[in-house]
View 1 (spheres, rainbow, N blue to C red):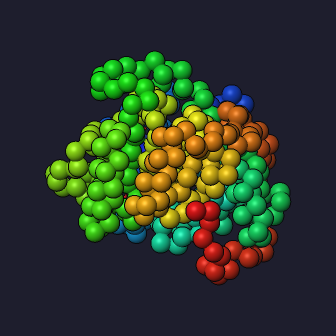
View 2 (view 1 turned 120 degrees about the vertical axis):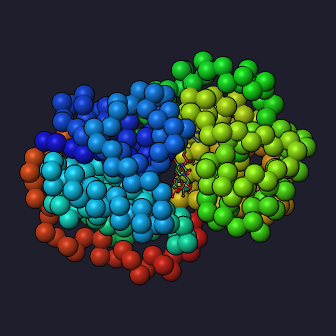
Length: 382
Ligand code: UD1
Ligand code: UDP
């Protein structure tokens, strides 16, 4: 049996690593495909070294573009790849454009499609990731949910029980595997900061960074918080482009994007993290660091109900209140079930049990409830 594992953007590398390792440990032949959605050294290459991820077997080099352009480039390149090199299973991770594109192509090429991180729902259709998640799940045969709420979403949408596997969180596998190496990094000394004396910020969602009328007030609130606690902000290229060289408020220190080990080292010693990232909400929960999510909703409610995450949105009063609570140690530290470092193994066990050459099921009645009903579901935890 041959399995293609597809990664394309920064958060995909952490997700694909434990699955690839566990498949190889079970002597399953793997093909690592990098779509090239992210391509800068600090958005891509650095993660191969930091995560000890082997070099990709195939690089599609799709680069940036509009949603349709980028998705289409992944689809045409990946379709060509699968024609040249057919596989039995296509593993896609997360919710980026590369995830959606590879899942659709894999399904049409007759591969068994496995979605790692299935079932997450923000219920916010303005987020491109929500569209990507729902479509990727819909064309997947194997749905690996990171948490019980995600499995429940899938059941509610009508997926069959035999498709849904509560596997746990692969980001956590990677974090636990790399944590010791991360904590050995000298990044705090390099930046001249002490543990617990700074906040860490990431911002890259289009809804937060693409419109100056939203971004500037948001930076204004962060500038206010930075009077009490200096903030480090490793800037995603989307934020860098939005800033276009404009200064940020005093107390906010803009950095280049960081490698995984340096970023985790800073996360682990931060007094508080403010973010709109999905993965960072999960990592802070695992590290026991308070996290304020600068969005109206989260597709990862377990980080709120069983973790350190508080969804504060962009309302200054809520951000200030969350910040005070974090600084006063009022945010409880808890860890979700099955976030134990073994999600990759559970996923590989299921994939390795697939029959080589199995045809995709002809039962198109699955997930019959998905689609229209989702649009009327109220907002998730906030
Ligand atoms: C993408 C994902 C998002 C994910 C994020 C992780 C989609 C729709 N979005 O958003 O879900 O949270 O990655 O970081 O898939 N750019 C560079 N260098 C790079 C890559 C991008 O300069 O290596 C710039 C380009 O100008 C590009 C812009 O960043 O147009 C946005 O990149 P893109 O991959 O389209 O979306 P992200 O905002 O990175
Ligand atoms: N990350 C990193 N360097 C940074 C910012 C984030 O290595 O400068 C890591 C972070 O530890 C997490 C992942 O990138 O593992 C999250 O990716 P991102 O926030 O880009 O995407 P999202 O999770 O929101 O899809």
